[in-house]
Length: 220
Image (tube, rainbow, N blue to C red; front, side, top):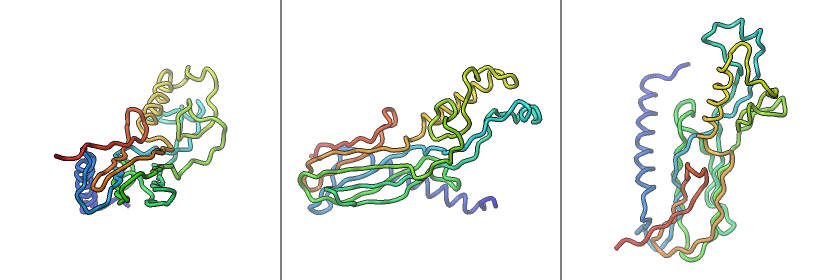
């Protein structure tokens, strides 16, 4: 059943408000005047991985379909969920499941969490681990695309007798989408010293595809 217009508008409005809050939380210098605590802030936006089970169609199956509907790989799947965990000095401080926004969870996920710390030297471990995985029926994935399982691609399969160069472009598009999505597992293990009112920001570096910690100088 398709979503009602009112529900779609409500979801869209909530996403906009969250993005505004996320953007504001991502700025440094990172200081906070709330009491005598230091703070760790987890704040980032990233595209979730689509986990798929794919089957390579035969030439006979492709020829039976209209030309505009021909794709070499037939895939089913979903956008992945992730477990977010923050451990402070060997104690779990945050544990949550996060996924992409939107009714189908196919939009970027937006993470915004905070946790108060005792000032001083603190050991922080932040992990984001994919929970969903496809059930593989073969050993290899399509052209090495992460998150996609399917039948083994034969050497020389780039030359397609029905699709021609379209099969190669299809693989390239899947590889591009996989490269733009967040990795199946991210981890940041660091020890940091913070004073009262200071904040360490843990965020996602999309260019390097890693979690990073940032601190700012105190406000004047």
